[in-house]
Image 1: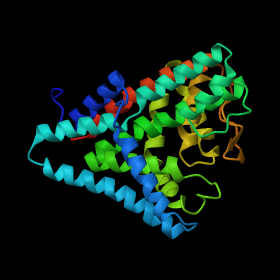
Image 2: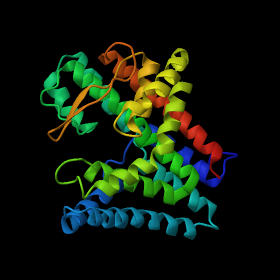
Image 3: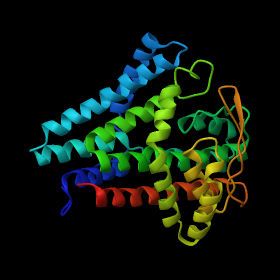
Image 4: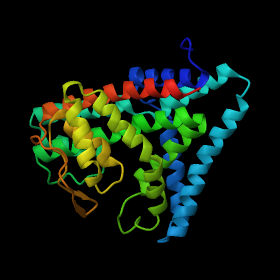
Length: 307
């Protein structure tokens, strides 16, 4: 256990280090197991109904929260067990190394001019339709995904782990996974996925803004621009959260994000974020480096407030 840290703080730091060094478990990933179970339950519960979607999201999320509460209670007087479970859970729910790996792979493909492979690879980062995207649009999509997922897959889990321990870690990851599964505005999920999407929005209100602040803090010479563009453009995104970190990244890297996107046949025209040039593959690599710095700052902040 890292010295001079409380049990939860030590677990968060150790889990973050495990994710940084080893990445996601290759087999039996707990998030994948949860996703499989949630998909099976969806097949049984689906209906074009908001109340049915509320019940589905509640059952899945509170099952994860309940497991966290039970584990927390069972280790109340067993600090090493609490530390070990927190570390393992943090490792399982974080996605920082995987995010960086995918960003670097996308940059490599785009630098080589391999647009077909980059179109296929983009699905590892986001659900955007990539079949007609050129190199410039693929670069923008990947850079936006690196920014957004820095909050979703790193800052937010650490935040909830710091303020709510094991229930926070497991509950947040369950909710975020549900949003990725059913939180789309497609005909199938517009009603059924409404509750999961709205609950995920609420869970990310604070972490996304914390992620933007940490982005500015880690931006070096671009700190002032990151702060200014975040404050000016963060609310221009249709999501109450995604635009926060995307705008901060745009300012930090002196690039411009936003534009027309397509998801499952649904086309969205989004406001531009930032005032620099359109991103290039080298900027995608810079975004990966910035994402790593933000993750490191996030775990330091989480350890400072956790017990």
